Length: 319
Image (tube, rainbow, N blue to C red; front, side, top):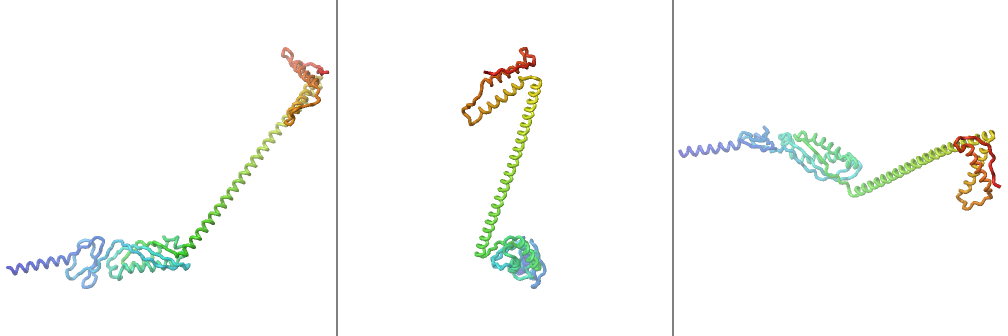
């Protein structure tokens, strides 16, 4: 009985070992390849998987998550013979674990060298100015080329980014001087344009001012001419009325007309701005007589009872 128990114990141990050898647990984010006598047979997915113990074995453990790979700095000669230093970063994901394990030896090293080679090819076909201003275009071209080359390996290139583009120091200084000159030129052009616009606006303002001033003078001249015309019409009408009064024998009207002119002449002489003392050989009695004639005209035109009447009299003059 003791020998039988030993055999059973050995069999149980062997069974446990067989179970452990035939059950494989694959973590999330990985795929395992299975080899039978050195030949690939199948791919194990995440979770518990069964294989033939002692016949099948795990070949390669492939990470199927998206991975990042730094591209070291390298020198690139552009199309215009400028030497620059470039580095970058690439992202890739294994889609087919079997092809990634058996189609290429050293997947990461292959992707790295493929990326570096195509960086030199793509950037070497462009000018320096284009490299510095068209990074998105460079990234797109690199992604298209490298993804097509890595497709047979069961790998999908998700992104390729250029991190730094470093020109030589002397070239950077030259570019800085060029940029400074361009900005100074732009500032001078903008300043000249501003002065030009300012002069144009000033000229337009002066033009509008002169136009308005000319229109004002024209309007004033028109008003002055109209006033003179009306004054002349009034003067002509007054002269006509006086002439008719004289023709009808009314002497008081002519006396009133002469006295008015006489008074206006004295007023204009006395109101001159450069005259302080007025000394004229004026016969005051003649002026008083003329004023007396004006009073008689008023009495003849309006009587004491307020009714208008016509009289003919000779104006009195002083001796």
